Length: 158
Image (cartoon, rainbow, N blue to C red; front, top):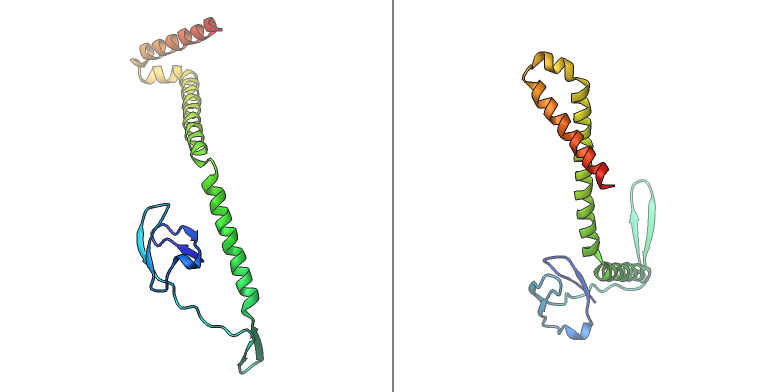
């Protein structure tokens, strides 16, 4: 049978013999939540039930055969359990660290590009800015000299 943890909704496949009819305490292996589980009385479905639904417009006959539906549900549950096992055994923590480092690296690259665009924009508008803010000339001169020194330092490293 398939039992779902009420806390984290993780599904577990448990043998029917392990749960007595009076129920028992269970503990989730994923989140360590404890709860009392009692087997619910299964709905009794007869195999060949036919229902006739009559409406004012049409007569509709629906035959309910629980076997194909039960097989389909069992197959979906087995697929869910297999998918959970695949996710559980995969290397998600490794990937999340790589994603975090990738995000950090992309932020650094965006910061460098933004700074370069800012410097190009200031260089382009240097003369009009100095006319409006005369004190800015010394600051811009020092900024461009510092950038020139960084450029020469990088060239010397290669």
